[in-house]
Image 1 (tube, rainbow, N blue to C red):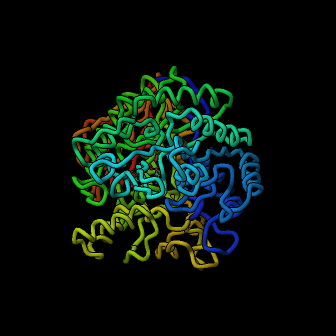
Image 2 (cartoon, helix red, strand yellow; image 1 turned 60 degrees about the vertical axis):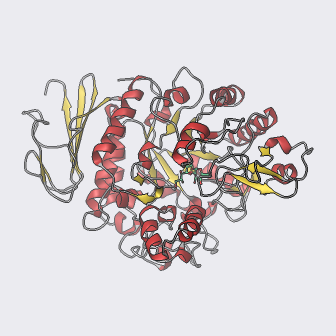
Image 3 (tube, rainbow, N blue to C red; image 1 turned 120 degrees about the vertical axis):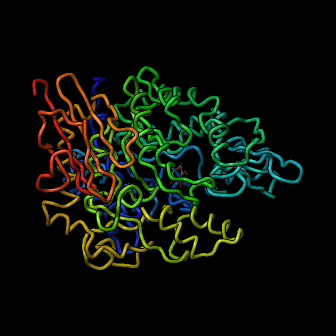
Length: 556
Ligand code: TEU
């Protein structure tokens, strides 16, 4: 067990996707004033930190992950005064705010890029990666996360620029010290305003292999692992960022990034390293990707998920810190992906809440999970908004896939599933907006909404609230060691958290059927201290999607 206490280890994060949280000015898009009006909801849930997805000026090609001015708020979300008020209102409620820092790339409308593309001599040329073509094509065979080559030809100077996301998200050249200085300036600007930290977008990708060799394997997974992630100068950059910026503030940092393995992760977050506090490790978010990637999903295996937890928790028992989450704005709703969003929606949503709130790592709750929001029944491509989905539709349609077949996949994996508006109540558009919402509201909102959950002591929301308090009351759940007690069982997830004189046993039934278990509970232990069902189960039995927590103190 490790003990070094830090506020960000004990905190619970709540993630807000601003476009979809609350519209205040009747344009169908969520905004800062809308968020301010809903802060009590977040505070009452018991969260401590809000991670706000990007609200900066942006043409919104990738919903704000393409920033054209790092010092301005997108007018659609409000003004800088609104932002300052948000921060003040949050701090007044004891909530901290962490912002998204998106500096692997910017928007093609950012003035750096606008100038950069003008001529090969322009002083901003070197802010990006420009290269001549090879044999009439791009400089190498790297592909973008969102389909197609990672290089875009620009006739203005007859060269290609690198973009590992969309062609409207050119990659910044961190080799250039001026670029790094610009980033540190941006960070100081926001930190001086009093924000409490950053979630750093794809921070694992900022250091490039500038020889740009062809990949021997053309698949994205291989290219990410070998060429995009954990590049040669990544730790030098992060240490410099710490020296130049982070060491001067008491803030938290959470780095996001594909390609960070459990072996490599301590290099990012080891406590003696002076780089980042924690990461959003993504390995389990790729657990049901098939041979052709995200749009070729396979069933997820509980055994594989447990193996992931064992491996990652083992590493972080020694040093560094991780996060505990099962969904975010890039992946499907957790109850639809890992639970049963039909008959056992309530039970399985509570079971998943139990899991994320009893695991090591700082828990992160994506907005709407606290009421068990589900994937949405998108029926046609016209209803989709996400650039990833739209790009892959084009690619797969060319390969012969029908819209019907594609939409069946989108309903499982598409990022739009998690971007539908927050379901506040059963009035028009779930109380999110009085106008036409920018993306459809999930039609299940008349039953599935915050108002309904608040009216019941037995709701998913009530369960989250209780579980957050429960975690806070028991530091063992934050700092205790972790052991999987049934690694080979396909439906039972049973684990133990231990500190010196105290332990918890957490038992989760990942199935629609009752489940008997043996050999896990000590003889003298009778009833759980927490369950997601009311009334007792038979001893050594779990009802469908039941979660039971047993508390054992030394001497019992
Ligand atoms: O996501 C990084 C990332 O790993 C995703 O590209 C992920 O592979 C994909 O969404 C799976 O469908 C971050 C942001 O969270 C995401 O919203 C952005 O689109 C992306 O970076 C580019 O900034």
